[in-house]
Length: 532
Ligand code: F6P
Image (cartoon, rainbow, N blue to C red; front, side):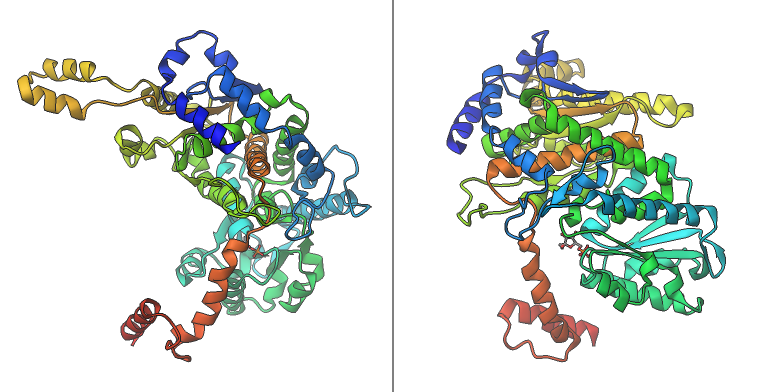
C-alpha cells in the first residue's frame, strides 16, 4: 500500500496545481462543507483518480471508529478504551465500558464542575481575601496545552476570573506568573491525570508554599483534577474539590472533561457547553458522513498523501487567527505524541514513516519570519491555513479584511509562483539590463506548485472551536488506523523521564557522574564548574 501511494504521489508532482484550479469545478469537487465549516483541499496535486485510491485506504476506519465510540479497548498496549468522545456525548445514549454505562458519572461530574464554576464566578466560593480574581492551572502536556490554547482562543467570551497557566518546571514560569497574583484571591487547580508528573507536583508544592505565606489554610483554595483520588487526598486536597475522570480519557484528549475546568471558570458553563456541543457535532459528522465527504477522513488522507506519499517531512499549521496562537503547540502534542511511533499495534515495525513534524505560527506574523523558506526554499512544506470569515472586533473590520486577504494571498502565491519571464519583466521595468537583469530576476522567481489546504469558519465561537479540535482529534485517529499504530499510548516520553530522575542527584552533586558517557559527564562537570 505504501509503495503504491508513494509511486502515485511521486507521479502527481508533475501535476500543475494552478492548471487543476483553472477548472471551474475544482473547488466544488475538492472541498467539503459541514455546516458553516469549510475544508478546501483544491490547491493540492490530487486528481480524482488519486482521491479514489486514497478513499480506498480508509476501508478499515469505520469498524475501528465504531469500536472507539462504543468503548472497546482499542488502546491495546495499555488495555484501555478511548472515550474522550463520551465527555461531549451531551445528547447521546449510554456508552458502555466493560458492561457499565459511563454516562451517569460523566454527567454528574460535569454538573459538579458547573456548580463549582458558578460558585466561583458568582463569589459564593471565596478565598481568604474575598472573591476569586485569578485562577492558576498547574499542569503540563495534555493537562495544560488544551485549556491554555482554548482559554486564549475564546478570549472574547472570557467573563470570569483571570486564568494563568504554570507548566514548566523551570522556576521562572511559576515566579513570573505568581508575581502578578495575590494568594488570598487566587484559586489553584492542580491538573494531572496521574498526579505523579514531576513538573506538576514540583510546581504545586511551590505554589502551595507561596500561598502559605498569606493564606491560613491553602488547601481551601486548591482544586485537584485527576484520575488518582488517593494521591490528591495525600496532597491534602479535600474530596469535594477533586474532579475525577477515568483512565480511558487520554491526557492529550482530556480538555473536554475536568481538565477543562480552568476554561469553564473563564468563559462560564454555558460557553463551555457550546464548546462540547461543537465537538459533539463533529463526532456525529465523523460517524455518519460518507467517507469521501467526511472532513476528518479527508484531512487525514491529505496528511498521508503529503507525508507518506509525497514524502514532505513536515506540515505547517498556520492559523490566521491571533487567538489560535497556541494551536500549533497543542497540535504538536496531539499529533506527534499520538502518531510519532515506529511499532505497529502487533509489535512489528511500521513499514513507513509515521506522524510528520507539525509546526506553525499565526499569520500574518509568520509571513515576516519563516515564509521565505516556504516560498523559495528547497524543502516543500504543505501549509494548512485556518481562518475565520469574521473577527470579533466589529470596530476593526479593516484589520480582518487585511488578515483574510493575506491568508488567501499566501495560498495563491504558493500555488501560482512567479516565472522567470515575469521576474525579468519586473526587473526590466526597474531599469536592469543584461547579466545584471538575469541575476536580479533569478532571485525573484517563485517555483510555485506548492500545496496547501484552507479551513474556513464563520467566527471563532466556542462551538466552532469544539468542532475544530474534534476534527483534528479524529484526523489523528484516522491516520493512526491507516498506519496500524496505537495513537493512544506515549511510551516515547518515558526514557527521558527515567534518566532525569537518575541524573537529578548527579546534577545536585550528591552522586558521581563516573558511570556516564564522556559527553554527558563533560556537560555535568561544566555545569558544576559554573554553579560553583
Ligand atoms: O509527558 C507525557 C505525558 O504523560 C502526556 O501524555 C500528558 O499529557 C502529560 O505527560 C501530563 O501528564 P499528567 O496529566 O499525568 O500530569
